Image (cartoon, rainbow, N blue to C red; front, side):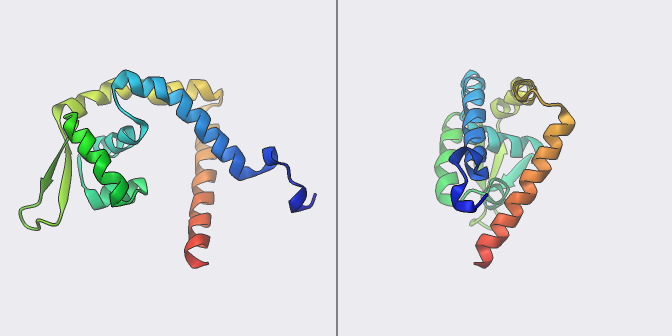
Length: 148
């Protein structure tokens, strides 16, 4: 089959896009129940793992630029999920820390990975393999993009 004959449904990029949208639809009611958005959930996951993070480190972890991250963090601070503090040693560095409310959401969010596992109809090994393959693909495409 020649490349120009590949149908939309057979394009990997469309399959990934479609899968991402389906996962977002599945997550939406779970996020609404917690009173957060998916990007806020990702920020919380980083903070639950690390305890605290600078805005720069958070952006690197989530592959988000400051222009996207700052308004997101401001909304989270207004909802009392996080607090932002400038480092005394270097006022340019803003540290992000969980509040008690943000920490408490961790327990309620524990159902999310289980819900995804159930919705996927795949076992844990299959999902881990798929995740490794997607991460490898992402690294390669990012590398290609940065060198071309």
